[in-house]
Image (cartoon, rainbow, N blue to C red; front, side):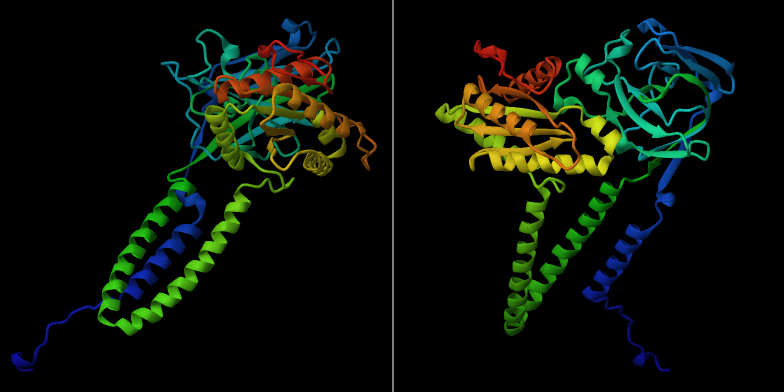
Amino acid sequence: MPLARLRPFTLHLKPEWILGIAAIISLLLIVIPKDLLTRTDRVDLSKQPTVLYADSYSGGNSTATWQNEVQKHWLCNLGQKLPTPYCSMRLSLTDEKGGGLDLSRAVNLTLWIDYKGNGSHLRIYLRNRGIKHYVPGDDLSEKYNMVEIPVQELAQGFTINMDEFGVADWWVSQRNIPLKEARPEFNNISDMEIQTGSLTVSGEHDITLKAISWETPFISELQLYRLITILWTGLIITYLLFRITAMNMALNRQQAKQQELIAINGILSTQNRRFEDLAKTDQLTGLNNRVAMQEALYHGLNNWKHHRESFSMVLLDIDHFKKINDSLGHDTGDEVLKLIAEIIKSSVRKSDFPARWGGEEFILLYPNTNQLEAMAAAESLRQKIAAATNPWGINITASFGVATLIGGDLDQLFKSADEALYRAKNSGRNCVMGDTRLGINAQF
């Protein structure tokens, strides 16, 4: 072939092809097995110091003894002297410098335990030495992240999602921890405790810890989705710039495309509003959730600062809710939450803001309402809950803590309401306690 006929080869990659390739890459990143993006770590049990203890220092008569310390095999004999006897094995996870395990990015924890006994559950503590609450030398200042797991599947390996852990109620109450700080932390795990469960009866319990492992993703799902979002945002911006240039060269095509974009944007706007409403609503009870509560708190604080309008808060906690779940099941527990939510909805004003705070706790914000008025409203709600009939034939009551905004300090408002709720529980429950800072009658 004569050289004069040769033409240079040029690859014209259309924008649609680029988007198609990006879509394939995005799909592969989403559907790729998580095992390929996850690292599994294990604890070398033979190198970790371990101690046993029981409830004797609390006045109990339970005993914990080693059968084989190297193999982490121990025997617990629960006594009957205390109503809730216990034995525990404490496994140290600190290194030579005193630093603990960082499990803040772990997604789950798997335990292999051989158990023989008449108990149904074991309690697991991951004790974290957080910067804010840990005091060196004070073991009880470690945050007690807790979960109870069934014993049936432990020998084959039982996997616990990290978001299934909660902070022990007794630790939150004992250390007077604000609600907003009572969340699990896993950034500096110093110890793991394996303890007999809360409903475990007296008798002999044979326990052997075989292995511990956890999974940590190389990249979290949130980071992965952010990466895909950034990728698509860049591609979309580039593509839009390309389309704008092309539409400037062809005005008629631009008008047609513009009408299509307007229609698409309208659909997206409607969907976004619907998703925004869903994001602010507790799916079980239909009440507002914590996301929606931020706006109500902002308005209450703003009205107090500019107009000195009273702003009160009521914390509501269903009494003995755990017993309801344990005796009647979690489905019934959910129905009880719905029942309480309906009573709340029918009892508040249009200007009030009821929300589910989490678990069996609810929060009510009362704008333009002083403490006495808020306590009266809480007392009325308490009576309605106590008098309400239910198909399960159980006595449902609730405890209330009331506080009023003083000095524009929302943190103090939460703390005061939480302290009032704590006093209500300690006063026998099924009562209303108010903020003692105001020097008025603090109880209904």
